[in-house]
Each structure stands twice: as C-alpha cells, then as structure tokens.
Image 1 (cartoon, protein in one colour):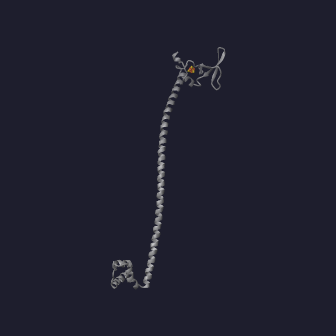
Image 2 (tube, protein in one colour):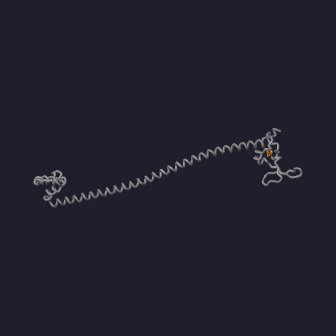
Image 3 (cartoon, rainbow, N blue to C red):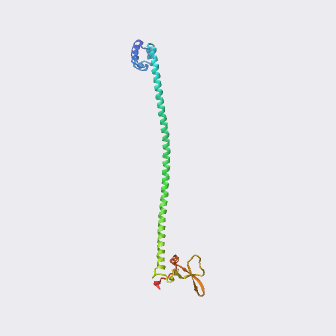
Length: 207
Ligand code: SF4
C-alpha cells in the first residue's frame, strides 16, 4: 500500500487551529483524516513547554480520575461478590426449607397414624363404658333392687351359698356354724362384681 502524502502546511494550519480550541491529538487526527502520530508531528513542535506541562498535568489528572474510577469499580465488585455469597446462603436456606417441608410431611403422616389410633381407642373406651354400664345395671339388679334381688343375699349383704372353710385375710367375711363346723360367708355387697357373673343368681321375683 503506497504511503499517504500529506500537505503538511495546509494540515498544520488547521491542526493548530483545532489544538487551540482544545482538541486532543486523536480528535485532530479524526478531523484531518490522518494518523494520531501525524497530528502530533504537525502540532508538537509549535507547542510551548508551558503548554506541554499543562498537558502533563491534565494527563495526571485523568490518570488520577481513572484510578479513582477503578477503585470505585473494585468496591462495586466486592459488593457484588458479597451479594453472590449471600445468594449461596439463600441456596442453603432453600435446602433447609426443603428438609423442613419433608419433616412436616413425615410429621403429618405420624399425626394421621396417631389420629387413627386415638379413634380406635375411642371405640375401645366406648365398649368398656358399655361393659361398665352393663355391670352397674347387673349389680343394681342382683343386689340392690328389692324385687329382683338374689334370693341368696341376706339383709347384711352376705351370700348364703358363697362360703369358705377358712377366713380369707382382707375380705369382709362372717363365720357361721354349719353341721358342726365353722364356715365363712362372704359379704358380696362389698364386692358386687362377684354377683354380676355368678351362675347361682336367682331373682326373688321368679320364686
Ligand atoms: S348372685 Fe351369686 S354371689 Fe350374689 S348373692 Fe346370689 S348366689 Fe350369691
């Protein structure tokens, strides 16, 4: 490619005009359609040392400004890194929430099983309650109700056919003589459950 030939005198005039207006070498090069080096070559020899000093100071200011911007960017980068680390913490939190959710699901399953057991226990309690009621009615009929009272129950609550050869310690018993020997009658009114299942029950009403 052939080297470009410039009309230096013509270009210099225009370059110096632009330089006076404060254009940089690059801006002058763009305006004139030449290289930055060419723009420098045209102008630099006409610039005073004081002007160059001012340029150096401006350059130093720019370097300082760029340095300050780099510092600001570094701080922003650090903040971004900190935020990124928090995002990692959020991932941990999300994992823990997931584990907690799983635990709650398991807890719900356990509660459901407990609820089933409680329901079955309620049925059992109801059955026992029915039995107790039946026992109560049975006791009431066999011992307490006058017209259905067992014929073998005496006025003091002792069963006349429920007797023992020996006194049983801790039970309410009454000794009686029977054919020359001592027997012990049991006070069933004190232990009414004995009467509820007794096969010898006979109602006064039926006699
Ligand atoms: S129900 Fe049985 S135990 Fe009770 S008084 Fe009658 S015979 Fe005795």
